[in-house]
Image (cartoon, rainbow, N blue to C red; front, side, top):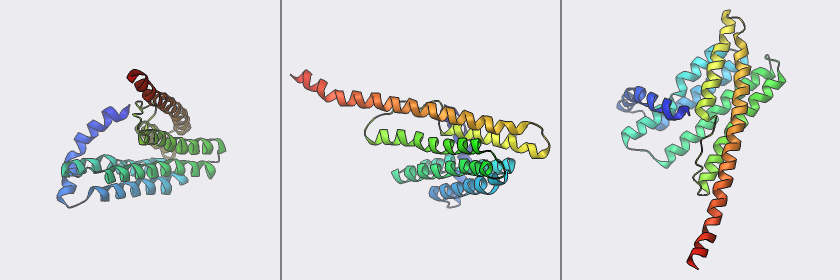
Length: 220
């Protein structure tokens, strides 16, 4: 849902910055790698120590590379299958680092096995949600559904909650409860999205498998 509106807005905002990087001779692939490295570092250095505010700031600074590299590629006329593959693959790495960092916090100083498990579920379900669409498209199906919680929603909900929860260390009372709530929302939303996509693929596969039989009957 957020992809439809937020991506278009930030693409317009970041176009001048993308043009600046092109003039400096920076490649889209370099931006993709640097952005992913920044997100991974922010998540795995700050989150396991409970530094959610600063970790979120670092991650947010680098997460926009996902829009900048594609913008650069379009300006250069170099949109390619390789670029799409690299971008999608490293998105999975970044997402894993974010929820992995949260899981490490709850497994350690956060001392909450249930929320550790919820964080791991968010990590795993996010990967599977992406896989169902990619696999469905790979076998020739349109997978004409996005679902309740896509990658943009997962990141926004989790990072906003983590950043606000980090204000607890600055003396804001009770605000740390936002992160557990957000993780449960992402977990449930991801599960619903997974079911939506699996049901859609099952229906589309059944329709595709029935199509040759219908064509054969028509020909007779």
